[in-house]
Amino acid sequence: MTVLLEADPSPVTGHPWFGRHRLAPAAGAATLRDMLRHEIRDTGYWYQTHLPAAPIALPTASYAELFRVSRALLDLVRRAALESAATTEGRLAAYRMPPGERRLFLADQFTEERYADCVARPDIVIGPDGPRFLEFNVSGALGGPVEFHCRMAVWRRLYTDAGGRLPFGCQDPFTVRAEMFRQLCAESGLPPRVAMVGSARDQGGLTRYFDLQVDHFNSHGLIARFFEPEDLHEAWDCPPRLRYGLGLRDFTIADWAELGIDTAPVGAALDNGCLLVGTQTSTFLSSKLTMGLLSEGRPWMSAAERALVDTYLPWTRVLSHRWTTRGEREVDLVEFTVSHRESLVLKESIGMSGRQVLIGRETDQGAWAAAVAAAAETGTSVVQEFVAPRTCRLAVVADGVDEPYDTEVAPVFGPLLFGGRPAGLFARFFGDGREGIVSVAGAGCSDDCVVSV
Image 1: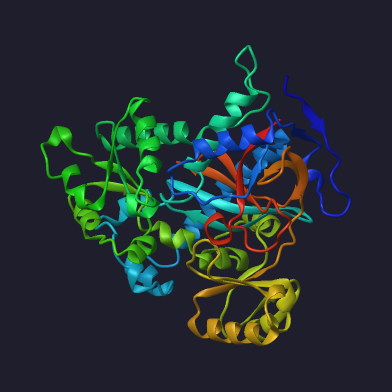
Image 2: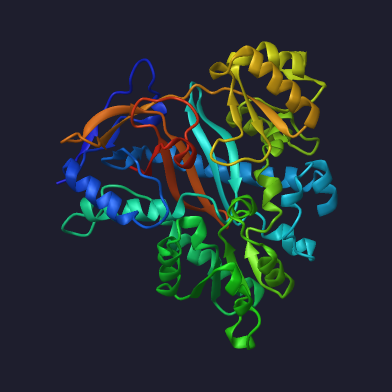
């Protein structure tokens, strides 16, 4: 019988926001390792030496807060990005987008803007004053849905009681996303057919990552198919009854460029009426420059919106040679950034897996000053207040250890939003006590599902 354990937060690093309850492991270390690795197999996922022994459990109020605020902030992110200029060309210039991101826009700007934020996941840490949103990932290719699905398959088997009940609550990302596509098809007057566009070359040559998603669509009232770019013409160059007018864009231009994959077939599909969400305009929403615009404040923001941003966003500014506000003071932004290295983080506007992030306290002063000077010249980076993350207690299993054991972890929460609806809460953390940029791909961290209790 699964029990909820009482767990007092650590007086040094913990936070009452995490609550006092957690889930006990429901199996031994060997069983947990085998089940978790079996479910995530052949999806291109990185090997993890530390795995969760239970889901991360949050109080219902804390769990709901992340989704409530995520939806509200995503609305502001969308508005800030779209109001940066009246047209796509204007936004490309305002954001100084690199050449690689200047393709795959729809000719119909209304449709391009309408479906830009269909898939989103912010990254959130719990700081001294509660949740802080470090960035927004807005892309059909964001991490979390498949990982959550695979982890939750294990937790459901282990925690479901004889009556079919679970001791926790959560949403299922695949189910919420399928409903989003049903609604999008109805809104567009299209048959319920979904094209999953990606490449097995981006998943180590294996297709299970896509097969899991396609199988779920097909078993929940939709007709779905996975398309490699070379096959994508079959989605539109066919009889009308067989066409796929809607799909998920499960790739990034940058990843495909590294792999030498041509995006021309995707452009052809877009030109021939295949809408892939989220659209390329999502790049503006994901840009960290948008976070800087919101943090500094926009003329159209109400007092309530301003207060929301001040409460949940760390101080963030687009870095350039100018003056700005820091608290009640006016400061020279470049000079302030150089002299306050230990309390700041430098981030390029577009980046993945933490590769374009420089943490001041982990960087030599000379290297920091040089990076700040270079970033100030390009105007495509932000400087952000460093948020010291608070921790919660979680049971984990590690390679070479016979039983699950408790440790303190500082999770980065990722609430999944599909069509604005809560779709599961994903988390990443270091299970071995490390600190730094928390990324599965870039730093080999661990991941888990988050549930409410």
